[in-house]
Image (cartoon, rainbow, N blue to C red; front, top):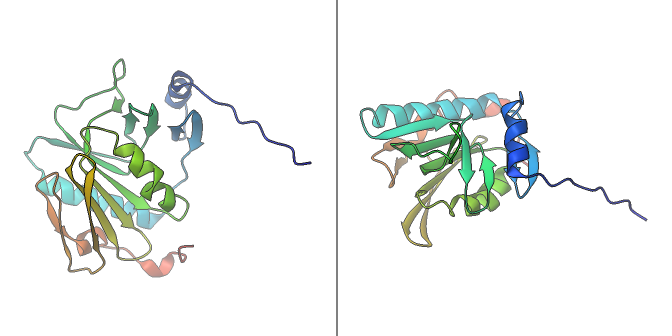
Length: 197
């Protein structure tokens, strides 16, 4: 007989209280509190490069760029996540009663890790699509040159584009930004990364 491990289900209030006092970051998915793993140098470098590209292009425009430690609430599911990068149209909209949790991203970008890539492409993307303001999703591979772009064209309609050459030009549809794939991979050394599983 195999013993079953009982998993505790938490309320959003229990999660938020614990999260505010925690040194680590956790996501809140379907009543479960999930510890976020640390990131690699390539993951951080790509996140910084994207953040730089966005800041240069959106200077003096009505957007805020939020990276890594900004909590997002997904109201329809009552989930909380920490996307790698979000672009938010100003004014920033916060969850009622909170000053640390936003609700109105226009663009979300995730840098793919071996442990999270399937989740980022599937369940997480489905959850993000339930946010009314959300219009564009970027998935950036940290193990090879590859950027996947999902752009909303209408209710329940998304266009998929993929880029795998350094000279490929990515034109975002939700915000006035265009960049080369090479801009995201500046200073990235694929030789120091283990092969993705």
